[in-house]
Image (cartoon, rainbow, N blue to C red; front, top):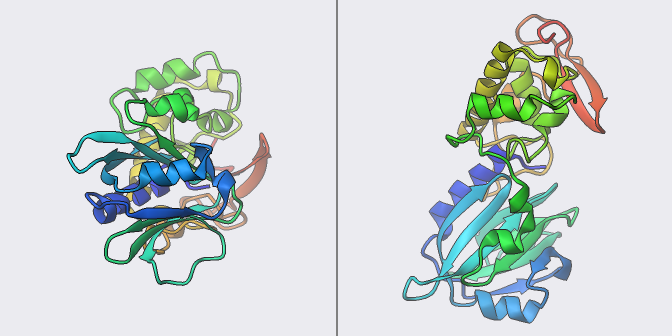
Length: 282
């Protein structure tokens, strides 16, 4: 599943390629991809002739502010890639990818395609004068953004202070920190020297501070490298992310730790894979 760095990489690409461009029309090829409105015809009529003012990211959600010709706000376009979703900027005449679900047509024969193999991804069209959180209810449940001032070491410590669960599982809780998934939870725990099965209430203040900093650092590093491609992720132009080549533990079961040489181990926690170094993480 694309995580914060992958979604942020897509957002930056969307800002460069689609901002100030008018949507001339669209096509919904799989109706259940459209989470709101429930009417495809309403989606078509609402999206047509609207321009994109900017894109923003909240957790793993992408949100585009739509405007009319007078630059008056006309609602929002929301997208969640979920497990296998991709947004691709192509020519309208290019051959359709097998799993294309939604198409948005732009001037000069350009097109934004939502491609999704597993069909878990969703698209929303939020009406004018409506808060995105009202329609995209998952936004209501998100915790602090890792790069926001709200995500302080104090905030993080407070969120963990009464949680008697494995720290790895808590890092995946979007109500604590928005945008972290399996890859970067493993990487942040390695950087901070914390074993993934450690109970949150057993962490020392020093460990929490180190983990807080590691989260920010690993996410920024991954963004700088264009995200991670282990399976389906591609950026807007169909290019792989490069972070996977420098991952310290994720996807490296049996390989030597880049720090101490000990074999990286993989276990299951809460149904999710978990990679760690048994020597560096205690």
